[in-house]
Picture 1 (cartoon, rainbow, N blue to C red):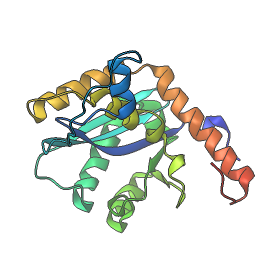
Picture 2: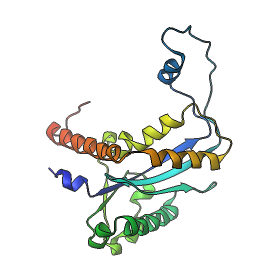
Picture 3: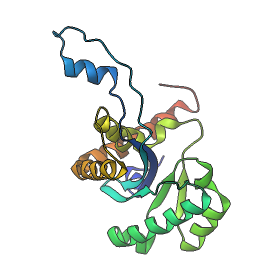
Picture 4: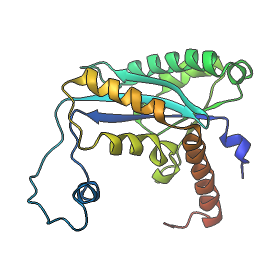
Length: 205
């Protein structure tokens, strides 16, 4: 079993949609009304068609790199190679020691573009070790514990006029995230990995 020091060397990435309007959850709307208030009539709203894709990489210390995918662009293999180039340059700037000695690991999910042969060929000569999530184990993704979920909850119920305003708000929200929250995400990843090991392949909640 890997030690916690190993997990502190991981830089993980994720892609998430951010909408101009995303309806509140039932729990959020009920909290806003209050327990003693009469139940209001509810209208059914849908997510806005105006949206943007955020690609973000972070480690236990905080955000390493974020990038909003330009409109009309698709995160395909060629595009993701460009993302890899940008993230490596960013790691060199903000995690210089780890980059110099290559004591970091990139953790992706199993999206086809992430695992493509040409992406691996791009990273191999740069001596970058890439990790992938175990199949059928969505609970082993640090973004699931923190940024993606947190951002979606922060944006629910808000209205934005355009993509630029969404991106501005997301950027502001990311600046508010404390280092302890990133550290907690990797602690949960570590705990989950231990649970998977002790379960020996058996199903558990």
